[in-house]
Length: 315
Image (cartoon, rainbow, N blue to C red):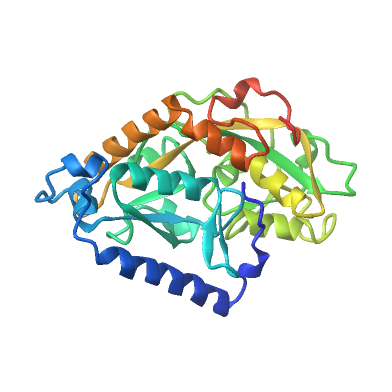
């Protein structure tokens, strides 16, 4: 879900640049003495809960993925973050009255929970699932995505999930796409019902969805016969010149939420509730809709996607 496909993020030098940028943001934010605007202006910062800590520090530490365009990506040339999730995170911080400190974190580490106060929140298109609800507080969904199948651009033998038996299917690790192929996916309350349509596939996992798509784009069957990711992520990869294509109808629809660690050393429930109210407000005043149209070619993905129909670039 992000247009600068960020293959340039390979290598230690790139990681160092990201780390330096994040460290710089953290340093400048830490110099604040607490928020005097937004929601935080009315918060008692003498408390020990996560909301009081964020308001006192003046910084909201946000975990997201630097290789997940068009949701979030880090431009190493301009040393700036960009994407839908980035804009959402910055808007949430602004409404709290603090500054967002964006941190590049591996998806498997984020979804494992028990963050040990390394960051406050995940604004990274996380799907609310029954299993994840044991680890996280979730806000109301801030947007929705269809899970889609991609194949190499020259492939003509795979047109839908029934054709994936015995095929190598590539996905990002610790994603709902992995759970779906394994037959273990249980979405949270309010998600549209779905059926498991893939059986007997050879599952291969990669660090990120983009890595899975990169391996698919090497050629038909070279590493992957197909890959599964969010339609928006696949379409952004195609728009950036990736040699893959979308096939078939959506496998299921994901309600995507902002997540907070239930095991946070400082109680994160108050922060979760505050941000949940901000998400509701951003729906009501059209902010989320406008950001969706900005990053997804004019499409509003902030309403339930089940009515959007088949997978296509203009869905």
